Image (cartoon, rainbow over all chains, first blue to last red):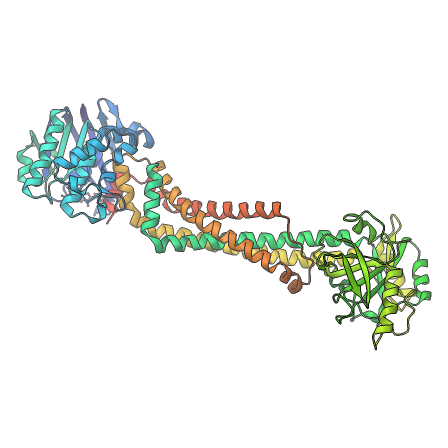
Length: 222
Length: 402
Ligand SMILES: Nc1ncnc2c1ncn2[C@@H]1O[C@H](COP(=O)(O)OP(=O)(O)OP(=O)(O)O)[C@@H](O)[C@H]1O
Ligand SMILES: [Mg+2]
C-alpha cells in the first residue's frame, strides 16, 4: 500500500482583506507507505483535519491529486469512491461518531454493510482488545466519550484497510486505553497498513515512525 | 435485514412523536385523496345513472305544481304535489309537433300509517307507451309487470315474503331495481291500473283522499316526451310552455346540464381542497424533514465514513419515510373508506345531487391510489429535503455536525 498526495491543496471561501478565499492546506506533496505509522502535529486551525480528510478521500482537493496505489481517488465517481473507501480506508474522525440507535457491535460492523470487509467475530475481537467487549450490545448513545472513541477505532479497523487515518484518536482516552489503541494501530501497520495519526498527544507522537508538523496549511517533516 | 432498513426502523422507533406526526400528515393526505376521489366518483356515477334513468328528452308537469314538486324534485327526490293534468291538456301536449313518443305517468304518495308498509313515492307508468321506466326495469327484471305487481327501488326494504302493503291491499314485488343514487331509489313502480287501484283504496281509507275527486284511472301527473330525430328538445319544450298554460315543460338536457353544472362545481371545490391539502402537507413534510437534516448530518457523516454512498443515505431516508408515510397513508385511507361509506347517503341530501357510490373494484383502486399517492409524496418530500445534505462532501459534513 502506498498513499501519495501530489500537489494537494484545499481552498475555502472566506472573506479576507484582499481575497475571498484562503488555503486551509497549501500545495503539499506527501507519501505514506504501508508498514509505517506517521504523526501529524500542529496548532489548532493549522489544517490537520483538512489534510486528513483530503488524504482519506472525504474532501475533494481544489488542486492536486490523491493516489492510492496509483489510483486517483477523485477520478472515481462518488459511489465508486465510497465503495473503495469502505474496503481500503479506515477513518477515525476527530469528533465523536456513532449511530446512537444502533448497538456498539452494529456500529462497528457498519463498514461490512457497505462492501468493506470484516465480520462480527473480528468486531468482537477488536472490541475485546480495546477493552469494551462487554459493551457490544449496548446502544451507542449510552457510551462515554472514551468508549465511543474506542468504538470508532474498532470500526475503522474492521475491514483491515490498507490506509488508516485517525484524527486525534487518543484525545479522550486514559493511558491504558491509549496504549491499547496505539498498539492496535501499530499492529495494523505491521500487517501492511499505512497509518496516519493526527495528534497533540506526546504519547501518540512518541509511538510513531515519522512525525510531520502542520503550520498554516504547510506540512513539513520534523 | 438490510442495513438501511434496520437503521430506518430504529430511527422511526426512537422518535415516536416525530414519527406519529409525520404519519399523521400522510394520513391526512391519503384521507383527502380518497374521500375527495370517492365523492367525485360518486357524483359522476350519480349523474350517469340519472342521465340513463331519465330516458326522456322533455318532461312535462302541471304548471300548478311548480314550487310544490318541480320536475327536478320528481326525478331526483321522488316528491310531487297532488296536481294533475286534465285529459284535454294531455291530448294537447301529445299533439305538439316534433314528438316521436309520449307516455303518461301517475304519481301517488303512500301514507305512513298502518295501511301501508312505508311512505314511498309510487310511480304508475303506462305499459303500452312507456319508454322511460320499462327499459330501466328490464335491466334487473325480465318478466311481465302485471296488474298487482310492483317494482321496488333499491332502497325499499322488501319483506322476505316479497309482499308489500299499500292502503290495505298487498302487492307482489316482482323485482327490485338497481341503485340510481337519486330519490327514485325510494320509489315504487307499477303499471297505471295497479296505481289507480291503490288510489281507489286510498280514497276509501283516508279522510282526505290524495286525489280530491280526480278519476285515478285518467289522472296524469307527468308526461315524458321523446322528440323526433333532429328536433331540438328545447323547441318542443318552449312550444308546450307557450301554448299550454297549464303545463310546464323542461328539456332533459337542461336538467342534466343543471345537475352537471352543480356536479362540476362541487367536483372543482373538492379538487381544490385536495390540492390544497396536498400542497400543505407536502410543504409541512418537507419543512419537517428539512429541519431534521441538521440533526442528521452526524448520522450521515458516520455512514459516509463507513463507506456509504449518497445513494445509500437516500435508501435509509427512503426506507424511513416509506415506513412512516406508508403506515399513515394506510390508516388515512382506511379512515377515508369508513367515513365515505358512512356518509354517502348524507352527501346526496346535502348537495341535492344524485350520488351513487362506486363499486368495490373502483373503491379498491381508489384506495390503492390514495395510499400510493400519500406514500410517494412522503418519500418525495423526504428526498427533496435531504438531497443536498446527502450529496455534501463527507469532510464538510463532519465539520457541520454539532
Ligand atoms: N469547510 C470549511 N469552510 C471554511 N473554512 C474551513 C472549513 N474547514 C476548515 N476550515 C478552516 O480551515 C482551517 C483549518 O481547519 P482544520 O479543521 O483543518 O484545523 P485543525 O488543524 O484540524 O485544527 P484542530 O486542531 O483545532 O482540529 C481553519 O481555520 C478552519 O476554520
Ligand atoms: Mg482537527
